[in-house]
Image 1 (cartoon, rainbow, N blue to C red):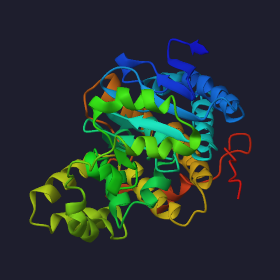
Image 2: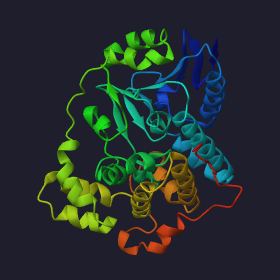
Image 3: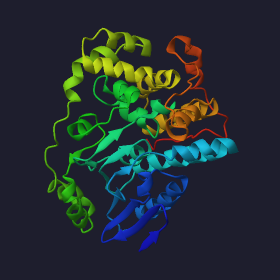
Image 4: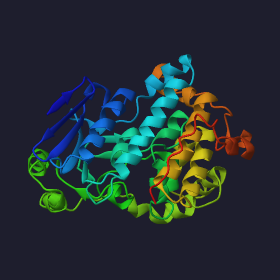
Length: 356
């Protein structure tokens, strides 16, 4: 059985349900149509005894998914909130479904995987999240006036030490061992072996999926992410974003200087909200709880124009000169940040609940 749309290929091959994101020219950026195509397939396969596992990958050589289609979200602002709200609500529900999926789910996180691509792949349980030597994983939302969503705050809140704060605020790209160290992936496979791995998985039973993957895995290449544990701990464990900037300024280190410069270009409001959200996520009980909070944050940042301005500067006008509101951390009040966490009207709330 094969179902093909312009944007996603859904079919069964052997014992595997296969989902291939199919917008290679757009780095497989996720659209609402893609979300709506994947959802019913997963529900159907969940109860189909012929489908033992699910494989997720992306078309083309550049990556699994560069994130949600933020240019489409930008354009939707002219139509009001309905399109953005529908996209985020349905995308987050899909993230939760994948997280709780009862059959082995194998995301092949080859190439660029960011934002919405993380939401489709990094919440998978069971040790089947695959990266390659080409993998570049990141949550760079603060560059466009948003917070790490699609459950990003949940993942970042469970990264070691203060790495969640660092990765969430800076949006650094993770490679090799760094993706596994940070908790976003499980195993490393050389990209040259992926076709052979897919063939083997399409013959596998659910109980054998991990052992099949293990035949293709090897130690990942070194990443210097873990090597920076001490300095990241010193600089990103402090209470506020201004304190982080001060701590970086005290470090006599090129990395600290560049990191501080990068943060100064980010949205002050989005950074403060991200720091608070990651730390609050550590106290939440479930991914679903984190997604509920993230919808509030994203919709408020969409409504007040911070996200729209970030996309304009980076992707529309491409002047890379966003006019953040407020423009500096010194002008940002605690009350403004706290308002971003305020509940939405009842008909807009996500309302996901964990099964436990």
